[in-house]
Length: 72
Image 1: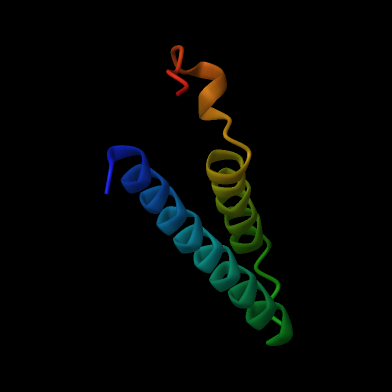
Image 2: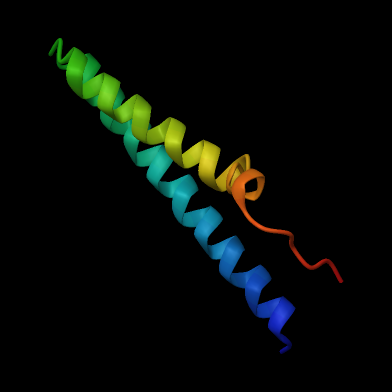
């Protein structure tokens, strides 16, 4: 397996992990809201974490601030 295939697999694996984390955070938010707890600070922290993960992993914001990339 060449280097590019390994990088693809690693990025796919990270994407699935992030997807799982987002699902866990969403379930956690739902459980907290159903129990009737009004923990606004917890919801804000979870929302910030989810936004960071989406921006970093799915919107590729890091590419804006990185150096030039090599494209095959």
